[in-house]
Amino acid sequence: MTTKYKPSAVQHKCECFICHRNYTAGLEHHHMIPGRQRKSCDDNGLWIWLCHECHRKLHDKGEHDAEIRALAQRSFIEQMKKKGYPEATCKEEWFRIFGKFYE
Ligand SMILES: [Zn+2]
Ligand SMILES: [Zn+2]
Image 1 (cartoon, rainbow, N blue to C red):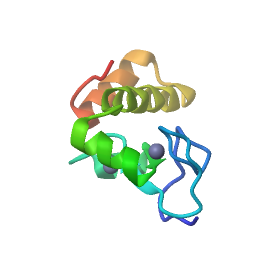
Image 2: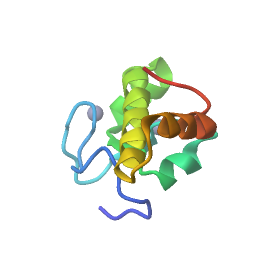
Image 3: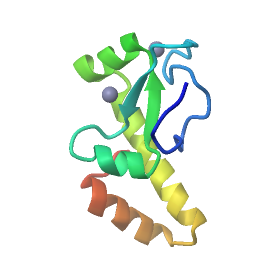
């Protein structure tokens, strides 16, 4: 499967992130923080593959949404820490871009 997106920072397998069903085709691209922050998600690799069923449940019913948002936040902060920023700065930067903390 080819993609124009920056590689995911949280997922290295081409399978549904939630149910781990392996698809050769039909996986969908989910921005971990949907809405206005889609672009920031792409820039930071904060996206995952989902099968159609899990993707629909996530958007319709919010299934796993909270944990996936929290994971995006952790991943973003980890990426910044690896570049040498102190934790407080990483958190500020997350908040500046995404406007909310997810725990
Ligand atoms: Zn699935
Ligand atoms: Zn989605």
